[in-house]
Length: 78
Image (cartoon, rainbow, N blue to C red):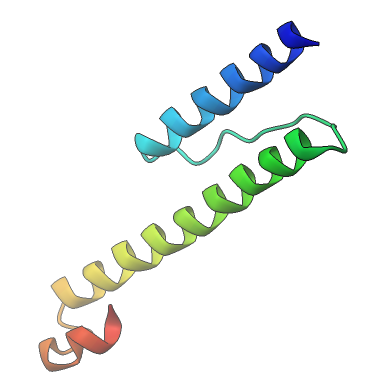
């Protein structure tokens, strides 16, 4: 049991490191129905939300750089 937990924590640690490098493709794929499974699902949701937020910010920055969003509206676009 302890070895299994160590492996799961290693997986989640690797996933967190990938997210820190802005790589949101990695996902926790365990099938536990306990707190560990909930933690894995939470990591996956966090990765999804971070990816959406960063993509949205990049898209808005690109639109502003082409003048498609006026600079006066910049605060609203963020």
